[in-house]
Image (cartoon, rainbow, N blue to C red; front, top):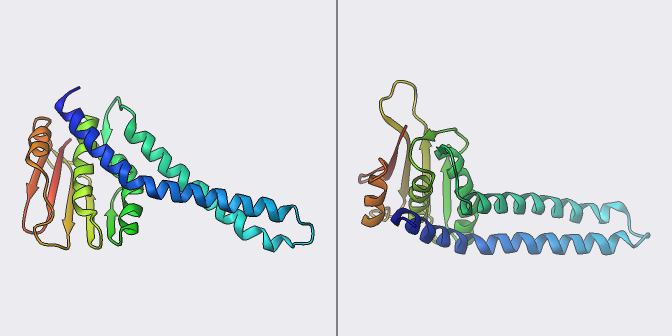
Length: 201
């Protein structure tokens, strides 16, 4: 295991710890609504309107649960081939946006639907994005993350992801992670307003 792998596994553990409560809540909601639907379906005296809302709620919760499990599996599996910043960001956002909301905060993620392939190793992409999101997804505050995919003819720099936080000076990344990412051409640029992760094409 490389140092980069070890750093990523530590961040993944943080992501899972934060997401676990939301996944469990979704699962409990499914179980509850399925049980209510089942019990009411056996009562011939009840109209369909008394069952429908619970069945619809269970269906929506199953979809939410499936998306979160899909994201957990995506992040937990080793990835071969070219990494995509937008795809990885989407999976992390699915887990961390609800977790931030549950803690009384707000995490706004923009641009995660864009395709932004990069030559950086998948583990470096995951580490950089998770470290940035975890830096701004803090209780009772508002953080934001914006992905800007590169345009044609913009040089060697690829996608840029900017992280900002309503608390001045709160958006940082530890030096060990910064150094490990630099070894794979992933640059961290900090300004007074935000922290930017610049990926190679």
